[in-house]
Image: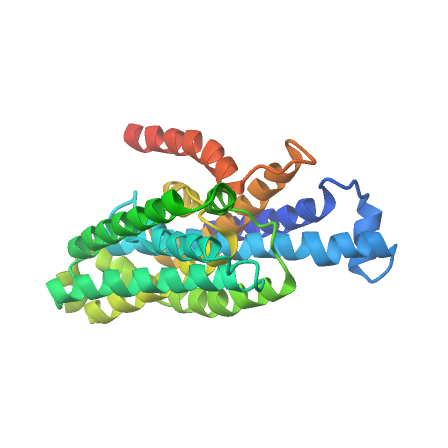
Length: 329
């Protein structure tokens, strides 16, 4: 019953976050204008702002934030480390390297899908490298080797980014830095559809692994004795969670702390049952990122702060409070 009410509260929070994101921004709209636009009425300008700009942006925030939080919860279970997050396995480094390379070669201006496409390709390359190194070192996919592989691959891509930026023009450097800080400004219905196509089926698959992740948190030998295909669960959870994080990074840039703070906070409040933790993390992550994007738009309006800056400013003190609370407990 407690998990039901927690889910209802977080679902309401996500819905409220979407409404606030559509309601507020650089252009002032009333609640009546928003509702009229959503139902097909209102003025042309108001409908365009609501339906073509703010609503896709809010929905993309829900998908990306929820996906990153869910992936973070899975990685924390997989690595048995509450400080793990999606980017610790080199995914963000690969995506950033692909995006920076596309910017440096001038491909981003050729078509709107080149930049997210390059970022997604870079993330997939990072996933393949991490998985390949981990499997070649140990066919049983030791999580310690997986973690070390992610750190090494992430460092390699960071060096690639530094080299590209050192040789690039100042305008390219500025664009790359802004992209790596994260933003939902480029949200369109097409990008929402693409992220949803990757995120929603993958999330459903990860939610189905809740019981197996519970058993693996006790120990791999115990989980295997109780009938869990440990190696299959590790490969599927790593691959699927990585794809979810890659899709989010490709369309929103590198946004930190969502995959770290949100699952950790939900775990401290609701416990470590992954059948409850995973769906609640998705809802909490979506609401958190959408509200962070709203703050990024309205704090210095009409200027916009990179969303990664907001999540860091909010996430760091929040995480310190959670950490202090867990140490006291």
